[in-house]
Image: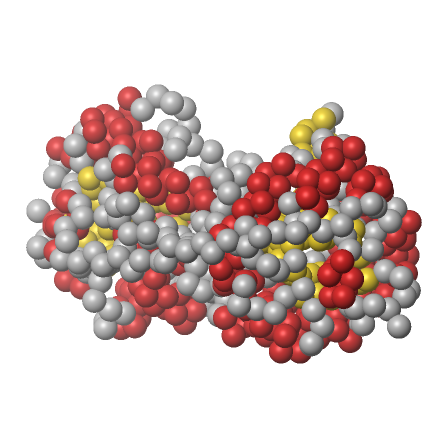
Length: 610
């Protein structure tokens, strides 16, 4: 009978395998394929990679199941094959490994944040990890490897889920950024503090960057725990060489750091992204004669999270907030960032809008997925040079959660207070359809991040020196096709911290009345969207090609019968004025979106308020 991995780790160094994805890509598998599904469609390809790592000296091989959970498989239409993919992945590795090599069931993060940053509940996360672990257990893995986790809460849920379906040992890995924290702001010390409470075969670090940064984290963790440690770094940071991403850390460099890892107390050494059988062969040769180092655990008090007193709802955060608090009917006009660094025309328009008595200008963030000047930079210029309040739209499309927090802190330092949380149009709608979207979180998650900052905590819940004072807004579409889902998301946005609502443009009172009936109990200001149509062609385009926009047929017919564009534009202004007069008694403000930057049209609509 094979000695258990727990027993082997007491006195031996074990070498794990390297990257699976890198090797599959090298074999011609396109990166848009679901690599986990290859267990079913190309089992020989996967098995050959396992064999190559065993021949290189790996004591542990990982199953090709890193992303084989229901949330990552669903976009490929493979969620109904979850059990088969995981079971086959374990079975393939088991057949190749025989009795000499350990098989680690690879389980990665779900791919989407859990609540409160995301929409996945802890119960759903637990069930997803448990069903994957059950299939791997049935496939006869020796140990579970939970890897590349940045969210400690998700990692703990995964540990508990695995333990609910299997008694097999667990290795738990966290991935850090360059600043010695996870993207959620968690330090190595906090990782150790949280994971020390579980009975684990080992804890450690994988992916992240190259060996040297991971070495620094491992040294820190070794001082704080008596648990076995594991290190599986990337082959350095990839670089573009003649159109290809190449990992630059050589096998020899890896082997040198493998020795340092072991001297620091590591018992399992392997590789992650970019590593190959050559890297593993070099590690095996380097560690052959080494034994795990004796480590001394220090008692270190990790600072506890501090609950900072929440900002008072009565605290005035901006001019817009003050006016709404005083029950004033507010007016806002949208102004798009320019496509160049020249802001002369934009500032001129803002002065005209300010002089007309408008309360604020809205600045969209890459509307229609277009490439324009940073709205954050433009908002700062407008507020400093024109002296009018701005509502900064901020999308989740282009930034990960680290970038979001950085931008929000910068916005606070620049005096920008009104933030509208927007998920963002997908890139395929815009000028650069091949651009990659991020979407770490949606508008709800972004609101939670910003609300955390208002309450004096970063996105990991750690206290910051000074909280922000954002007046947080969210969008709603009264004409949404899935109206019940829209209302459900609106409630989630308010729960996440939204303090005012801007609606999509309204053209039909039936949709507006239905919407107001559903939100009558919501005690937050609503600013209704109004879009003065510029022409019949403009109306047809918005109706047919802009998601979430519906122009009633009678309005389009009326504009179509007009003899020229000037007449059509007058009808557009009349329709907008009529809508404004009808909705004014029920809302706290209006948000005008003039087409093609024709801000004078918006001002003509607002004349009806006088």
